[in-house]
Amino acid sequence: MIQQTQDTISSQSTLINVLVPSIQDSWIQKFVLVFIGTLLLTLSAKIQMPFYPVPMTMQTFVILVIAMTFGWKLGSLTVLFYLLEGALGLPVFAGTPIKGIGLAYMMGPTGGYLIGFIAATCTVGYLGENGFDRSFLTTFIAMAIGTVLIFLCGYGWLSNLVGLEKAFLYGVLPFVWSELFKVLLATAVLPLCWRCLKRNS
Image: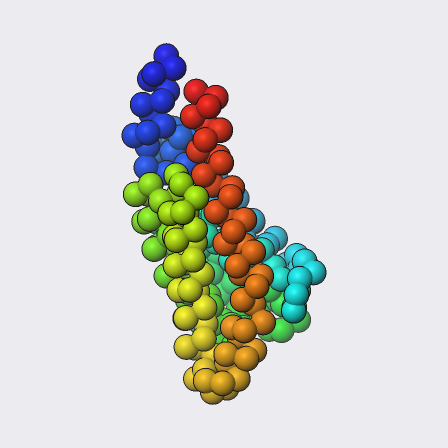
């Protein structure tokens, strides 16, 4: 029995497939996970934590963890549903409804980062399906790539609105340390989850 469980763990492509083995054949379970994922994304966008030099949210951390845990297909579906909720006018994004709502908000300064969420989820989710979340080094590499993709998209979008220099000064530089912290946190959490699963099996 122990050997069978260990074989299941090693053969499954993502963490969620090990935690919920029946999910591959259940659209209801997938829908529930997508719904829970959008709730976590909303909460992570709304709660600010003190950090230097500016307060941070945990949204990029949640994006990357969902991507690597769910895989690129289910992860991307989760992020797409989250963006759809925002497009329909639900106050799911950071700063909403005070800073705007719906498509008007999404076309504003943060629009590029939202696009980056999709790019990062597809990339990190694919890497997760190929075992990048099993070791600290490969998890760090995957999370760093995802973070860079988010900020490249955000910087490119913002630079069209305010120029290259201001986009870097206000849209990238203040968040370097907080993003590094979140990458390191994810790097610690995911491989430890796999080790705990193998130990308990």
